[in-house]
Image 1 (cartoon, chains in turn brown, yellow):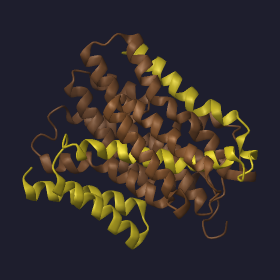
Image 2 (tube, chains in turn blue, yellow; image 1 turned 180 degrees about the horizontal axis):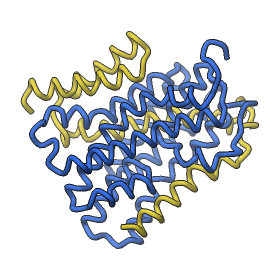
Image 3 (cartoon, chains in turn yellow, green; image 1 turned 90 degrees about the vertical axis):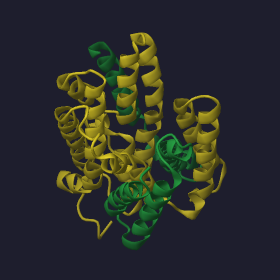
Length: 231
Length: 104
């Protein structure tokens, strides 16, 4: 536990810096995409405030623009969010004796893919779990997401058209973030888990859909981990 | 739009926050469930990375050179400084530069 400092809300905010840097351009892109599709800036911000789910928000914009019925859109987007069911229990198990979720209804709102990955990485490096820390981590990321959305919506739909290389670099921010988070979690014992998760994701995505691929990949990888020896 | 946002927002919150009430932290790590939960994190992040990079590999979002440059930069910077921030930003910068140089 020593060497990583106290798990205060400020420490959580500090640990959210990578997420802030990763979220700002992605949220900016979302703001741009939303206004490009015809939404107002307020509508784009409302999606970020209420949904706070990156990939699902991009898909929501596409579904709304395509005029898909609300029931179908909700079912599709809820299916995308199913993967989050595993995050809380996994995090609390990793937290061990320090596990607590008294305020889980609050900081749990911010338990996105990246917040989950960052928290898991910190715990793996010896960070003691605390709810204030989780609140700080989640709040930093959420604030960046909202700020990025506002900036993107304000800049407008054509903001990045004159800067294709910048646009491309911003677009690559998410894969880069996931790869860096993956490297921070990587151990020899988890290699088969990651290989199977990736292979199943590709296969199911190609033959069915990206959403099904996400869920199938996570479950398949975790099942491989469940069959193997403890790390 | 508001109905959609509220419904999906409520479900997403429920999927994230309600499982925190499950007392799974007491699960022993040497059990099958314990190993399953321990593997969930790497499996999830691995899956998300593959899903994010798949459009690039399929050629939907660019060509091979920027992708190789971006991935190599993330790997190199991470193993050099062990920093998620630096690796993420460096990967994006190198991807953008490669995109600019190759004129894709």
